[in-house]
Length: 242
Image (cartoon, rainbow, N blue to C red; front, top):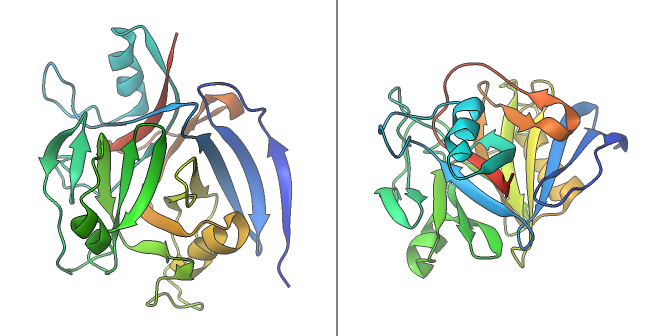
């Protein structure tokens, strides 16, 4: 029997994310909703002055200080190599850092179909990689990751309900009109099937993308959450004026 209930809710604030703790099918998750039209979502990778990886929420926040801005929400946003460079397609401020990868391969990234999280003016979308290649959307920010969790309302076909591959996992889902974006992180180890069903069955999103597992982290100061850990690659965040 499925059961869902809300444990706590941080009130929505302008230029921030509405974060909720839930239980879904016996596992705990933290879900943060961002209204794309009312907030500024950006991706961060390297310090524009030094070229060094920003690698942490604190470094992103410090980088924003020079523009009199503040980081209000953030999450790691895609797989990366040892030098923190993105594994897949990455766009920042309309500049392509790494090209789109369409072939399959080892690891979670290569478990096709994978996808791209694309941020445009007033909207954000999760787009399956081959659809992205065909439609070539004009993304101001984009990060490719994999696998897709939900594709056109269906779970990834290779997910197994009884899989014993359990990790802390995080990902992103978007509404059909691109107006709402949900970021989720599990509070305990879960498999892909369970995590994907959170997006499909609880959030009801038509498209959702896996960001990463095990190193998954969240920055949500309005609920007192500031995860530490190993240095990160791409980071997605909500930015507001101070």
